[in-house]
Length: 229
Image (cartoon, rainbow, N blue to C red):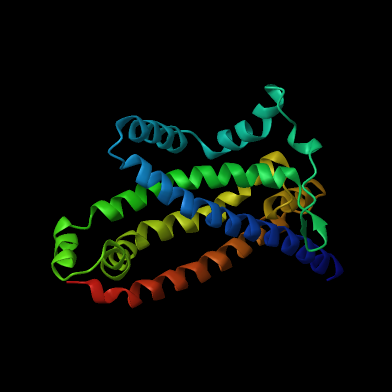
């Protein structure tokens, strides 16, 4: 029983780190993805082409490779070395490691690329007739966007966006490849000590969180159900 409580406490600490990485990635990736979507839709051809190439590279290469690139390339290029830096940022009285920051940068950029494609599809799915109808009614561009377009875009992108967000919480396990002390890192450490069950027990944390996210997104879809025709 004592071993179980100790393992549970350690895994919970790792899971909190995973959730923090998940939440901060969304804070970065959602607005950045929207910006990337607007850039890729720009009528300025060089900007649009550049952004499409960036998105293509980010979506076409493994996330693990991007984590390695963000973490190791600055050192290889003699710019800086992540582990030698000190953020000074605290989380539960512990300093947030620069390895965590490197993983966050990689996750934020990678998921912004995926979100940009979803945002672009949602925006382009709205017919121009709705903009024209808004202008006929005397509405400003701001009113049309927030009162007519935005909720419809959210409805269109909710399903694919929810899939990516659910995938994100599972992908946070890749941060252990650069020794971020998240859930899988600790469970692997226990396995090296001869305890196999913590690896499977760690899956329960992910399963529970994914279940909560699924319930949340299902409720959001029902609330936006009045857009069905």
